[in-house]
Amino acid sequence: MTESSRWIVPVALVLATVVAFLPVLQNGFVNLDDDRNLLENVRYRGLGWGQLRWMFTTFHMGHYQPLSWMTLGLDYLLWGMNPFGYHLTNLFLHAVNGLLFYFVLLRLLALSISARPKEELPSRLAAGFGALLFAIHPLRVESVAWVTERRDVLSGSFFLLAILCYLNAVAVGKARYARWMALAIGAYALSLLSKASGVTLPLVLWILDIYPLRRLGSGKWFGKNVRGVWWEKAPFFGLAALFAVVAMLAQSHTGAMASVTQYGVVARLAQASFGLVFYLWKTIMPVGLSPLYELPARFTPWEWRFLIAGPAVLLLSGVLFLARRRWPAGLAAWGYYVAVVAPVSGIAQSGWQLAADRYSYLSCLGWPALVAGGLLYFRPGWLNKMTGGYVFLPVVGMAGLVVAGLGALTWRQTQVWHDSERLWRHALAATQPSSFAHNNLGNLSYTRGALDEARAHYREALRIRPDNAEARYNLGVAAAKGGALDEAAAHYREALKIRPEYAEAYNNLGNISQARGDFAEAIAHYRESLRLKPENAEAHNNLGYLLFTRGEPEEATRHYRAALAIDPRLAATHVNLADALARRGEVQEAILHYRQALQIDPNFAEARQLLDRALSRQGGR
Image (tube, rainbow, N blue to C red):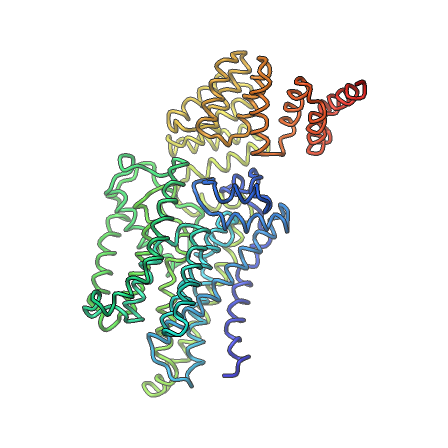
C-alpha cells in the first residue's frame, strides 16, 4: 500500500462518524444537568486564573473533572453560550476517539492474528469496520449529544491514547520503551483529570498482558522474569487509587452516593448483573434507548429481569473461561468489559439510574474488537481456499446493512436530544414511568408560566417516587409562585425530611420567614443553607440583605461580595453591595457597582436612581 492509500480507511471512518451524528449540531442544551453545569454556572466561563482555580478545586455536581471544565471554558471563549460550538467539540472528540480506536485495533490485530505484510489491506479494513461499529453505534449518542458528558468523550480520548502508547511501548522494545511508557502514563493522568471513569485502566493493561501481548499467562504470572511487567504498572495503579478516592469524595460532597443501609448488597449485586446483560443486549439490539433507565423506588432483586441476569453472567463467564485456550480473545474481551463497567454497575450506587447508555462508551470496546478479529481471521484469502469465496460477498453485504442500520438509528437518536421537552417525552415513551422525567417536564412548564401543568407533573413525579426530594421542593416553588406560602413551606419541610442537606430548601424557607417578618428565623435558615452549600449565591445575597437592614453593613458586605464572587451577573446584589458601601462612605466603589448592575440590566430603574443620587453626592463634595 502507498502512504496516501493508508489514510483512506481512517478518513472514511471519520466522515461516516460525522455524518451519523450530524443532527447533533442543531441541538440545544437540555435540563439534564446542562442547566446547572452551563446555563446557571458562570464559574467555568473563561480560562483566567479565577476560572482555573475553580476548575481544579471544585466537586461541582459530584465530579472532579478540571480538564473537561477547561475545554468547556474554551468553548465559552470561542462560542459564548451558543450550543452549536459545544456540540461541535463533542462530535470532534468522538470522531478522534473512533480514529484512536482504529489504531488500537490495528495494533491488537497484529498481535493476535499473524497477517503477512501483503495482507495489510485486510487488517486495515477489519480495524476500520470494528472502529466504525464503535463510532456510529446508537449507544454512543448519549455521550456525544449531551454537552454535560463532555467528560466521557474527553476522558475516552486519553484512555484510548494511553492504551495505544502502552501497546507501542511493549512492541518497540527497549529502544523507545521509556518514551512510550511515559506518554501512556501522562495520557492516563489526563484521562483521569477529565473524568475518573478510567480508574480501571491498570486492570485493562493486565488483561492485555495476558492476551494478546502474552507477557503473562501459562503459569508465569509471578517470578523474576515478569517482575518488570508488574512494576511498570505501579504508576498506573497509583494514579487509579488517588483518583478513585477523589471520585468518592466528589460523590460524597453532593450526598449522591447511597449507603449500604439505604441500598443493600443483594440489590447492588442484582443491579450489577443486570447492567452486564443490559449493555451487551443493547449492543446487539440498540432500540428503545432512553436518557434515563430509572432505578425503581422499591428495588426488588426478585424481579425476573434481575433473577435471570445473574445466572446469565455466570454461564457466559464459565463458557468463555472453558474456551479460553481455543478462543482467548473472547475471555479477554469479557474480562475487559466486566472490569471497565464495574465502577458504574451499581456496586457503588449513586444517582437515579439503574443503567445508562453512557456507561457503554468505553466498556463495550471489546465487542467491535472481536468482530474485527473475526473478519481478519476469515479474510478473503482463507475463504477462497475453504469455500471458493461464496461466503465472503454475503458477509460484506451483511456488514454494509449493519453499518447502514446503526447509522440510521444513531441519526434518529441524536434528534431525541434536540431539546429538553423532546428528551423527556421520549424517556416516558421509551421506558417505564419516570419520576425524574415528570419532574423535569414540570420544570419546563414552570419556566413557561404554566403553573397548573407544572404542579401536575410534580405530583405525578411524587406518585411514582414519594422520596423524590427535588419534585417536592419544586412543588413548593410552584406554590410560592402562586402566593400559597404556607403550602410552599410545608413542601420545603417535606423535602428536607427526605434530603436533610437540601440547601435550596433552607434558603426558600428563609424567604418565606422574611416575607412573614420573622427576620431571626429567616437569618437562621439562610445560615443553615450556607453551611450546607457555601457556594449558594442567592443565600449569600439574602442573608446580606437582612443583616444590612439590621444595621450590620460590614457582615452584609462580606456576604454580598461572596455572592458576586460566585455569580457576578447578579444585578440586584451589585445594587445591595453598592448601598452598603455608600452607607460606609465608600461612594466611589458604590458607583462602580451601580454601573455594573446597569450593564447587566439596563432597565434596572432603581439602580439608575441610586447611581444618580450617588453621583450627585460625589459632585457635592
